[in-house]
Length: 246
Image (cartoon, rainbow, N blue to C red; front, side, top):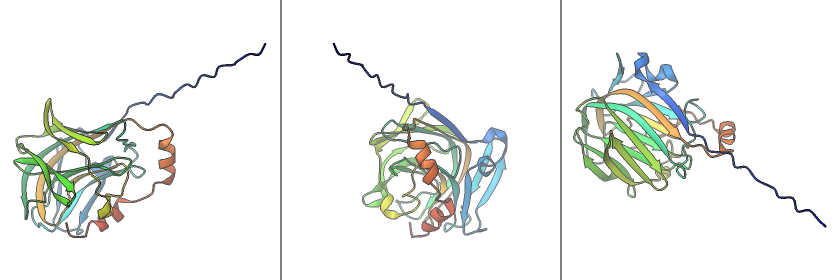
């Protein structure tokens, strides 16, 4: 008689990757911990100040100035693969001190989180509202929620899962909506696994405190090495592309 040999395929478990990109309790700057600090023009009038628990970044001297902190997979060792299909959470501590914008579609403080397929969300922070940038029409004010962003150094959790995102502050849901695809604009929105905190527009200005940034992600098996071998885009090139009017 013949023998039928059964083959068992063992699935490799997806392990949660928790990465801290910036911890202000070390009393140094994000660039000292591997993030990329960029300002335009350089030197310009943007001012970065060391605080006891983080940094203060101020672009209010000139609305046309931009400055902020980048995290890019393959450039910053701490940035993990952020796969929307299994979900990822970006945790950050921010306090908006002041903000001014020339129109309702811009913010002096923005947070961008793009996953491994270049889709994600850009959130604008005003003193009394947090809102999402639309992708159609691109970079216009979409859903928003009334919220006091100046009340203190607050911890936010931005979770991107599937086709939606949720922003929480503590146990409270601040804002939720659909993920966006801004890649038609070009860099940096064509980046995979991309994070940004700061003022990214010449039509608004802000001053804010920044004390913490971390990502909890579940990498896709077999994807990490591939991306590590093929990713080499620098933040400087991404920033230069953002000179297009926004």
